[in-house]
Amino acid sequence: MAAGGDAVARADDGRVVFVAGALPGERVRAAITEEHRSFARAVTVEVRTPSPDRRPPPCPHVADGCGGCGWQHVAPADQRRFRATMVADALARFGGIADPGVRQGPDLPTERYRTTVKAIVVDGRAGFRRRRSHDALAVDDCLVAHPLLAELIVDGRFGDAAAVVLRAGARTGERLVIAHPGAVGLRLPDDVRVVGSDELARGRRAWFHEEVAGRRWRISARSFFQVRPDGAEALVAAVAEAVEAHVPDAATLVDLCTGVGLFAGGAGAGRRVVAVGATAPP
Ligand SMILES: C[S@@+](CC[C@H](N)C(=O)[O-])C[C@H]1O[C@@H](n2cnc3c(N)ncnc32)[C@H](O)[C@@H]1O
Image 1 (cartoon, rainbow, N blue to C red):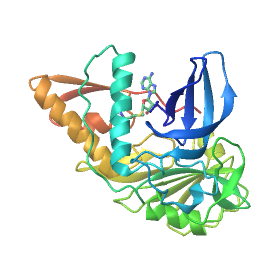
Image 2: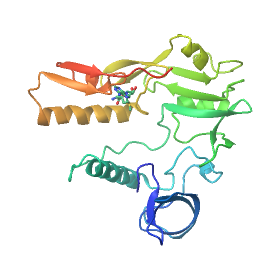
Image 3: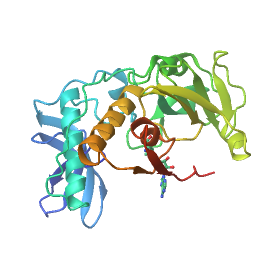
Image 4: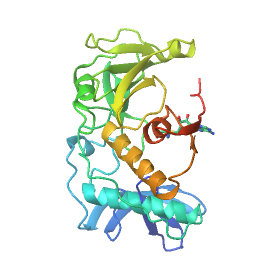
């Protein structure tokens, strides 16, 4: 599997072909969608010999062409295995680390977990882009969205917005909607904080809170945050474990690309931490 989630195949002329919707070891019929000098892209049209890692996509919108999730056809345990291989491969090829010893994370629920969802607006309702297309697809649910956001996808009316970012704190219940280009005519439950990206550009501040690793985090509208608190917690635990294993006596830790400071605050407790972050683009 290549970074991005496509399977890697070889064309007769030796070029690499990235095949969307295929899995390693499978025999598929694929249609070429893009051709370049050194590689091509293709999309699976028919699976002739399926991999044992393949499962029927649990979300009905995959069959409609929804481009929101790339790996609904991969069993969860295999998703984790493929991700670990992709990270190990990147560290080996770009980092020159021959055996990086990548471990898989914990087995977390694979449905109703995402606390940030980007959607486009179709006739005032949330929708997604079709796979490898700019065309819109209206949806009546999203299997991976946290219930706090699924409710907005199903019942929310987003007025004149062209696109929205839906965000929630799973453990605080707080919800924030960022409407692009502006927040005009939205109809959402009263608890939802709404802000237009035009207002953010003019300097308005908006945020929500999440609880992770025993701390309460204030997450600004456009700040990056991991897509699920239990996953963020697993990452913090892994970093804390690595610090204890490799640099237990370090007086100062450095958290590069710190974002809201998840690792500085979550795994650096009790030490001096230098956190380096870039501000979000306007
Ligand atoms: C993927 S996020 C990870 C944030 C944090 N480590 C976490 O796990 O929650 C990457 C963060 O790095 C910031 N960033 C991007 N380029 C940067 C740079 N050149 N220097 C410092 N921070 C940067 C981004 O604004 C973003 O907040």
